[in-house]
Amino acid sequence: MLEVVIAAAIGMVLLGLVMLTLSTFLQTGYAGVASGQANDNAVLAMTIIRRQVVNADVLYNPADEGTNAGATVPSGFSLRMLTAGARTTAPPETPLGTITVPNCVQWRLLSTGDLQDRSWPTGRPSTARPWHTVMAGLVNPRPSTPPFELDMTGAYQHRVLKLTFLLPATAKKTSSTVALRSSVTALDAQFFAPTASQYCSPVPAP
Image (cartoon, rainbow, N blue to C red; front, side, top):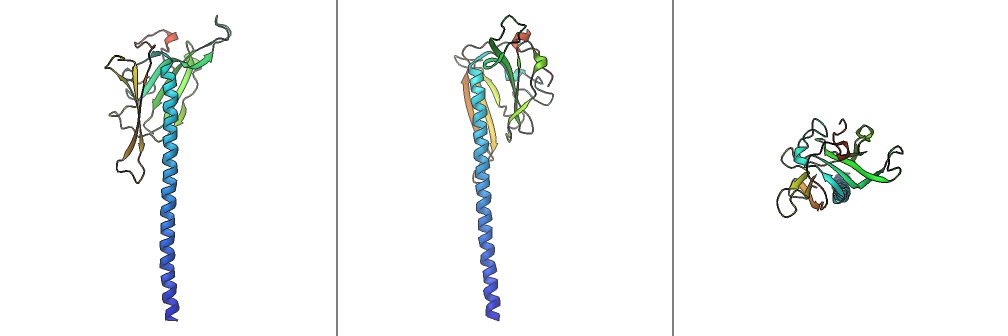
């Protein structure tokens, strides 16, 4: 009987070790999948922004945006542009008829980590579509690490937009975050603060 009890106890210990190892393996796998998905989403968001900036006609300086994307959005955490990279169809009553025209596009990163965008046809801010969450989980510290920044130096000053997205690191990483960085040049865009409606100003209510 004693031998049976000892054997059962050893079996329970071994079973516990196996279950613990399996649980750790599964948690690591889930974390890896989640991290990979977050990276993919961030790269996709960067790709969308890059296409819009490359085709921008007017690019506003994110440092001057302030609360244009909401009272809780600090400078550098929102981006506004007039771009042919996000076109819309002009209303029938306009001389352009059904010709596609550039859209006003606005991005913002909330303190919740949600990266959102919205757009509206030029001259019609009241028709802006609601904010749409493109991805979640960004952890850019405020205000030290803005996701949007214009490079004010070099031959293309005011034309190079720097993107910085910070994601939580996985358990195997030594640092607390993983940084995804990219730069994109808008060669033909103008960089000033126009106030006419055809230049995406004023902005719709946040």
